[in-house]
Image 1 (cartoon, rainbow, N blue to C red):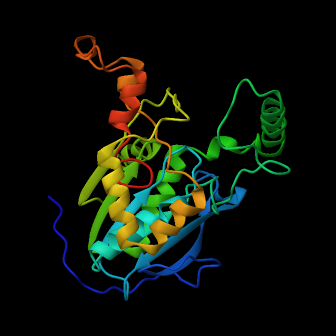
Image 2: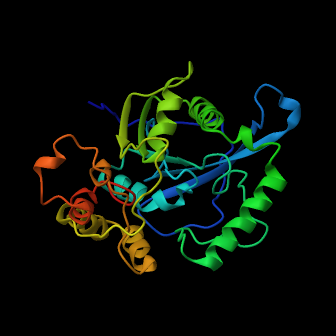
Image 3: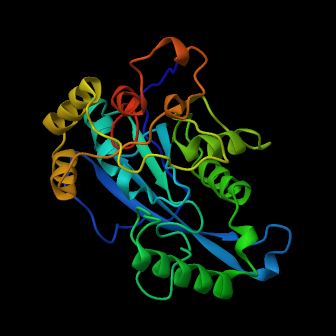
Length: 282
């Protein structure tokens, strides 16, 4: 049970205007924080941790910290969901921090344009793009990539929460973000009054279904509610051109114990059933 109460807050973080913003129910501030690349050797320099906070009229002590998945996704994709939360409860302040190496937090980019997000192993051109990008990333960042780890990212996350020091800390983590959140929660200085782990998957399993069929009535109802209550949500969906695609739960790789008794639950139907409470809506 998450208990929250309305109370405004001040912050030691130097917040400023965000470079680009969508219109919505929220106000927002952005900041770039410096954390050691190697926490055992600060002389190696810093990485940048980009963090955004969204709120209705002024920042409050009742906070929700949203952790994106991937690994590698920018938290920018969570803005529509954050706007929806603020529209439903004006007392929340929502925080979005890009994990180191992603988004605007010292990103590990290719030399030129990054390859398409969805990987197609049968597309020769795409394979060449990924190979070139991999070679560039290894040659450019190879000596420091080990510091772009989940543990170091979780330490950055903890330092930001403790610097902001709100009264209540709610955490929502999606997909790989659930592994990130579990790493954070094991830190000695971790804080959490309420934690939601949405769509946890094993660390050794990637997204098996890049084109999961959107056919869940529950998901569609949630999406319609989001669109009806948030202009940001509506605009985001229209810009995408099609409804979001979802990572299917463990049903599809046949690890559900009772699966053999559900003959109708094939991979396609599993996609339909489990395409809910992930990515854009929760």
